[in-house]
Amino acid sequence: MLKILFMGTPEFAVPYFEALLDQGFEIVVVVTKPDRPQGRHLRLVSPPVKEAAQRRKIPFFQPPTLKDEKLSEILAQFQPDLGVVVAYGKILPAWLLSLPKYGCLNVHASLLPSYRGPAPIQRAIMAGDKKVGVTIQIMEEGLDTGDILAQSVLSIEPDDTAGTIEKKLQKSGSQLLVKTIPDFVAGKISPANQDESAATYASKVEKDEAQIRWDEPAEKIRDLIRALNPHPGAFTLFRGKRLKVWRAQIVKNLELSALASEFGSSGEVAPGTIIYLSKGLVATTATDPLELVEVQPEARNRMRDAEFVRGYRVKIGEKLGV
Image (cartoon, rainbow, N blue to C red; front, side, top):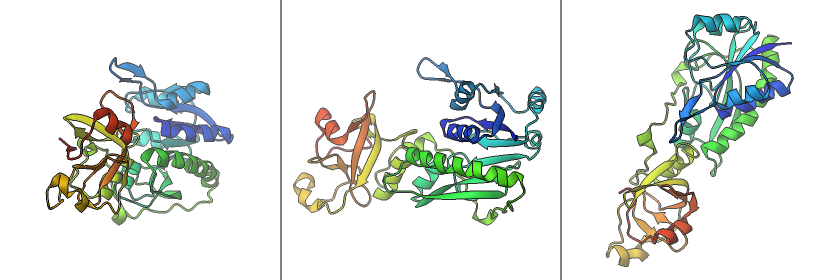
């Protein structure tokens, strides 16, 4: 039976871990990141892959670094045939890539060579892409640069968020992984080189990128909101405090000239101005107005925009972003 070294950290990796076991593969050891302090009280929280390994009673290790010589000796004792890496979060050194008999395979949540790096799903949605996918590749020392073994493609639907896409890729990707491994080991797959000229990089989303800029097009703002749901959440300012926006939709055919009495004879208003409250919270952008369908004020739960409007007595003409 093929003995697998599994490396992964977040919730995204758990369905892949479970699928391997459910399909009869033997995971002999797990490597995941150390527990991290979270919350106001900085309580140590275990990564989801560690919890999955504990449930399945599989040995696991949480090295702070992969440069430890003792780690090499420990993992070698398990004599893994294949390494499988799913969102582990660190680049693997040469000794680890060559430790398993058949090397290491990586599961990456993009259609490589597009969106190499740590945030492929978020960057694809932010860019307004219409499709996304999973790639199974042979690992090498570069970042997501190894040869491609298999890919699956999914459409990004208008109401998809990073969270819903992640769940879809967990299902399709884990199915692809358990199908690909036997063919790879049997030598039935011809690996394909990546086209370096088409490569793009999906950098981590920085905190300042999460703030909505109302002078941008409505489509771009909506896609930002979708991309940052459920983490970290796009936000704007309202009355000087943060207001997270979890869902939004573009409003078509809203006649701004009908609001001229509120804003002057021209009916022209600055981006980020609240212009409509009858059915929800609607604000101007550089193009079409945008309804903020689901929002979350500071220290409050998520709520529909109509509830927010009533509770905070929002008025037409108030500004978002200040």
